[in-house]
Image (cartoon, rainbow, N blue to C red):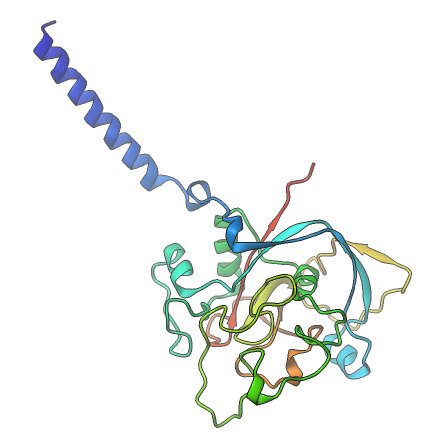
Amino acid sequence: MTKNNKTKDWGTLRRQLTIFILLFIIATPISLKASTDFNKMVKIEKGVFQAGCDKEEIVQHNRVGVKTVFLDTYWIDKYEVTNLEYEKFDKNHNRSLRSNCDNCPVTRVGWLHGKEYCVSLGKDLPTEAQWEKAAGAKSGCDYVWGDKMFESSNRLAHAGYNKDDKINTAPVGSYPPNRFGVYDMAGNVWEWTNNWLETSIKDFPKDEILYNPKGPDRGIKKIRRGGSWNDSIEGLIVAWRDWSFSDSRYYADLGFRCVYNLPDK
């Protein structure tokens, strides 16, 4: 084989190899291409905490009382997932006019689509217990920032506006973080969790510790936490919960964030 033929064959092989690599990258699922960016997450150390609030009106609404919970170490997103981030995953997503900027929290996303996004990055939606611990309050009866409501002149979360105010979502991170360094755990948008809603009020013995609880195995509605721009300040109490059908995807005040669970040893 002549030198020219060798050069020609190598050039052809290199082009074919380049095409193969490009095709592989295009065909590779997002879950294989993506890696977890821990710079945009906060580590929550393992330990025991009290979840819930024992105020009667909250217990009746929440359908669950106070419980003692142990959680293994996990990581949680510093910020709610934004439009820009989510649209890398779903290019056909239709933004809400209430949350239309690139750095605004993504809304109009159903529970399953939110979970699929998290899983594509090697993460998951938080359990309700993970969400509440990461909220960072000393008590479930408190707010993220403490036990007192804020004044409208010193707003600590994107919520508590008059119904006549023309309010949209705020870009993520617009308000101070909690003691863990996590932003917007109160207000801006509600956040999906992994938990199904209980069908009746459930009490827990005070001396019982629940280890990494995940809630009911099945249900119709999924728990959401944190309140939104559309809620009163009173509705931002950390233990307060609400719920929506899992396929609900048209709310302008409901988004999500992800967690990373350490692999089992």
